[in-house]
Image 1 (cartoon, rainbow, N blue to C red):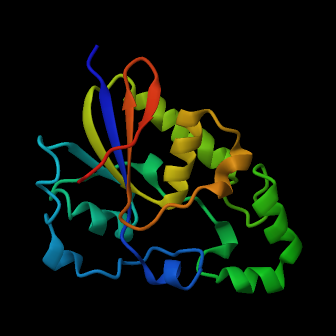
Image 2: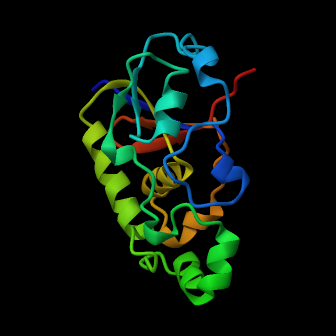
Length: 187
């Protein structure tokens, strides 16, 4: 059985991240057009490159390939009516709702997707990759990467907010009968 190698790449930094906002569909802050394909030689063999449908993931994917395929399962968490708002604004307007969302992974007071729903969606997508050997680079969102890590490590959704994912960071997962987290050095 040939293994599935999955490299999850967090999209490049956005203004919403820097301002602690629930993102809208916005562009990245790097000159991605000038940097296009700058990471294409990062891997020995050309991987299949997937990305979420948002501009920030498509632009970041252009650093790795000019033919990235949009995969809707890699879309960001649906933050409902909180999209575009600063966390501080939500804290002032709906403190109980924000607290419920932060502490109860089944809660979706914003009318969007709960952490549990996000984890289920990402887990189903990971299962679909189990029969697809080869290397996949998936450019996506920190929330999606957190959900993938919980799935692979078999952690409860309550652990979701204990994981930080930095812009342009990568996480390596392998499937060969079971998913494994692989930490690599780039020295």
